[in-house]
Length: 145
Image (cartoon, rainbow, N blue to C red; front, side, top):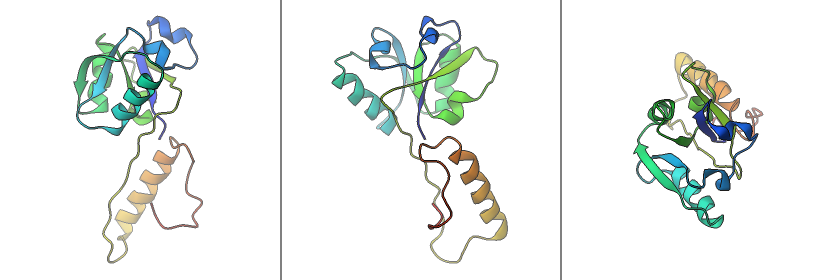
């Protein structure tokens, strides 16, 4: 899934249709704690653009990062599921370029096929998450992701 930059609706950066590393110059950024691929990608892009990255906070979950943004703690790059949902919390989103990708996997047993309920859940979850993916939904010709 392609990540988005979330920020408060009253942030001057909302005037930009797409945000870039230069847009984050001097801005407080809420990162994802640990060795997270989204933060590694952001750090690499910022380094390539020669823009210093200034963290104001870090957290383990995208939803908490969104709450910190809502409270005025800065902006954040998060997954589109948490970033694009309209919660009425004063947070909005903008695309970020170059793309930062959040990979998501579902681990299932290799043995017997999924039961009916698990298979339906898998298919529903896959369809909903595919709406946020870069490549779109699976064409059905390959194995279940």
